[in-house]
Length: 409
Image 1 (tube, rainbow, N blue to C red):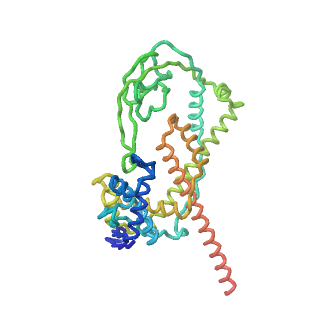
Image 2 (spheres, one colour):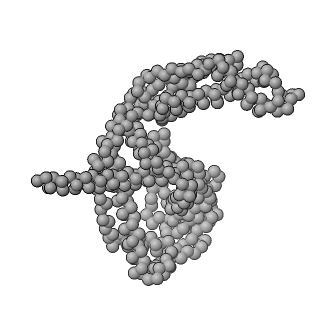
Image 3 (spheres, helix red, strand yellow):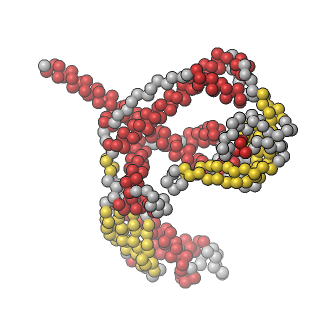
């Protein structure tokens, strides 16, 4: 196999490929055998028909096999041999395939731009701030606990503020309401567009028209608001008695006393704030890393990305370059740190995340999104670890140097 590589710019290449006669015949023979094993020819057992019959009757199937198997394999071999790090599937155009022994094609590939990360000792990293927990925050959480442990009783009359309405979507549900039965609390103050606000005055067994707002990411990953209208079936209505005595709340919530409840709530708020502060610090570190990272993104990569997102002209070239710089820098860290996610780790996080947000239907998209989130969190944590490690090493070097200077003096 002979090939020629022509660079249109540092990140865009065109590869012209010509199979030698013997190589082409070998690929064609392999394709014929594969087609033979799949098709049925009257008078012959499957896979046992003479090759000449297969060639004459199933020419298009043979050509398709070459296009779908031989050509991609050849491209993969060339990329590995030339050590070309592509950022997307290679686009190829068949110039000629003939079962008599001729295979020629061209392929276009986009190469990952060269990226230079800064020395980690140059990246500023602030220590996390010590969280403060206010009494008002503890009181707010205890108020929510009181609502969670409220005693419920079925009621036959219309739903009013504070009641719990259980319902299901009548027909095919929109994304936010997939997975079965749902509960909402009728809000005390009308919230425009809220499901609970639209169910004021319903009775059990009633059908009620409502509209549901939900966000869905577009090609850029930005959330776009969608609205869907439909009917919900009211399954039951419950009135609540919310406890106000703090001792009663603590017992209903399975705490030994009010002091234990307050301490646990305070600890939970503290931990949540501390985790948020750590996450903020890591994102800041990554942002500081981006500012010092060097990368040249040519026009060909900008146009490649614009086509990938559907030819959106609203984004300027500079904005696309910012997006790609962030993406390529993150992927470089991902590769350098060799970040992995185990099956057990993913399963655990999927379950916890679904429980936290009340997701009842686990889709492939939900699992993939969880996987990507774990990768992101682990990569930023590793970046923080490496920055701190480099700064400690650098400090030790400075310490040794200063001691030597003192001895010389």
